[in-house]
Length: 115
Length: 112
Image (cartoon, rainbow over all chains, first blue to last red; front, side, top):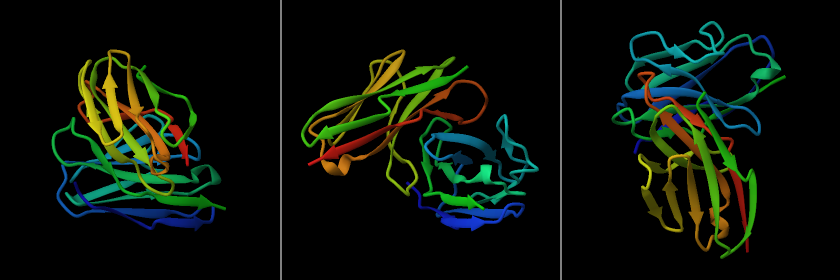
C-alpha cells in the first residue's frame, strides 16, 4: 500500500475565500481522485485528477469551483473556491496503485468549516 | 442509475454477538464491489474486493460474500475495536475510469 498525506488536516475559513488542499503520495500511482463527504453522508466523487491534463469532473462539480492540479504521479491539489457554508465538508483524496479495478486507498481527509 | 443501499444504518451489538451488514446494489455491470472501514476522523480503510457472485473473502472476524444483487459483511464474535462505520462501494463497467459509487454506510457499535 501507499502512504497518502493530506494537508491541511482541518481548517476554518471565511465565506468568499479559497483554500487549496494538497495530497502527497509516497510512491507513483496510476490514478488519483478527489471526494467530498458531507456531514452524516457518504462519499461523492468530485473528479479524477489526470496527470498532465485537465481533471475529469463528475456531474454537479465544475472546474471554476473546484480547480484541480496534478503536476506529477505523486501529487495533486484541490482548490475550493469562493467558499460558502454549504462547502463545509470533508475532502478526501484517493489513489489506485495498479490496474483500474484495484481498490482505491484514501488519505485521512481535510475537514473544512466555512463561517 | 447505479445505486448502492446499505442496511441497517446503525447497529449496536454486544461483544461476541455475531451479525451481518447488508449492501444491496443496482449497477449496469458489476466490475467490483469494495468494503471499507472508516473510523472517526480517518479516511476509509480498504477491507475487501469481490468481483463475481459466489466469491467470499475473510479477514480475522470479518467475512464478505457476494451475490448478483447484494453483498454481506458478516462479523463473527465482534470486539469493541470493531466499532466503526462500514462502507460498501461498487465499480461499474464502462466510463473508462475507476469510479466508485458508495453507500451511506452502517455505523457499528460493539459494547463490552
